[in-house]
Image (cartoon, rainbow, N blue to C red; front, side, top):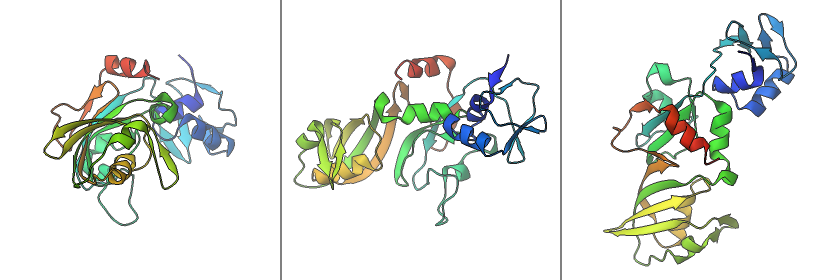
Amino acid sequence: MTTRIAKVIAHSGLASRRDAEKLISTGVVSVNGVVIDSPATLVDDTDVIMVNGKQIQNQSETELYMFNKPLNTMTTVRDPNGRKTIYDVLPDEYKNLRYVGRLDYKTTGLLLMTNDGDFARQLTLPTNKIPRTYLARVGGTKQNFDSARRGITVDGIKYRPMEIVELGNGKIRVTVTEGKKNEIRIVLRACGAPVQKLHRESFGNIKLGNLAQGKIIKLSQKDIDELVKTL
């Protein structure tokens, strides 16, 4: 079966499909030793595909993994400040995977990872409104979550309404659908409830459950199909 090369590059986890098209236009992609200039070029499993002189694997199926991100790790390939990254924790066989969105240095819990860069981009588009649920421990003596539940503007940035369930003893469960950088920490601080601890429990239909910290498992095709239905 043949597949468009831009899709193959995206499935490899090297880039999103849009970025793959840019790579092709710059002349750094070759098939069987011949440089190509069209993202619509068709390839199959027998073709040798090189990007910037490095061979990529032609993976025909999207794979999705669930990783329990440890505390004090950066969601990036490498950190200019020398801090530990998720790729320092992941076993070698998973280091070609692309992360789906980010969890900040101090946030733990569910981080999805995939071999398909285009799929990763789709899952993080704000327009798809995929719910992410977090368990937070918060401080503060004048907590008021009404503005967060309605939707709030902080420092000129608008944040969508959040679903917040108060669990007692300084714990709350927060569900967001947008994914702006540090949005939960920013919004809760504005509500008089600065975050002391933050842990993601679920992403769409995918739930972390009892997966141990620092561990990664492959999700089933059924899990992927159910997630795709929400896009």
